[in-house]
Length: 154
Image (cartoon, rainbow, N blue to C red; front, side, top):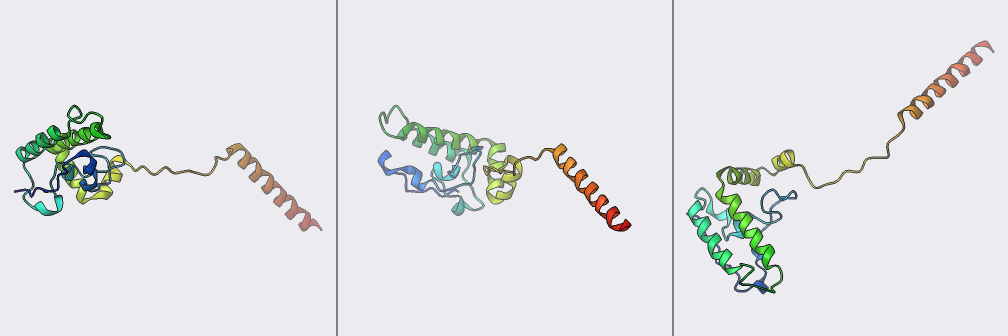
């Protein structure tokens, strides 16, 4: 079955986010910048054709949610954000549709951009007034015609 990471930190000071891997998700559709599998302690690269089933995911979620619950870690920096990420990873990986989409987009990152867009903001040149451009072209055409007629008759 799925291979479990043994590197679950002992305290919130160890920053579990350092072991959560990276995933391109600028629109926060899944787990944001972190890998949903790594958040719950699984390594996507090593489980291959036998991914963790829903039962394993739920067991890992329950263990981590107990460990990092904000009520147990009052005053700890980032405790609530960690718990929210763990909860979101559980929701993504236990929903068949979301998990299938997540796995597909993991293997085809270009599809993410076509489905959800990107976080890159494009800046276009300032807009030109169409009537002003048309007027300038009309004046240029008239000046050209006048110059051609003048040279023709001289």
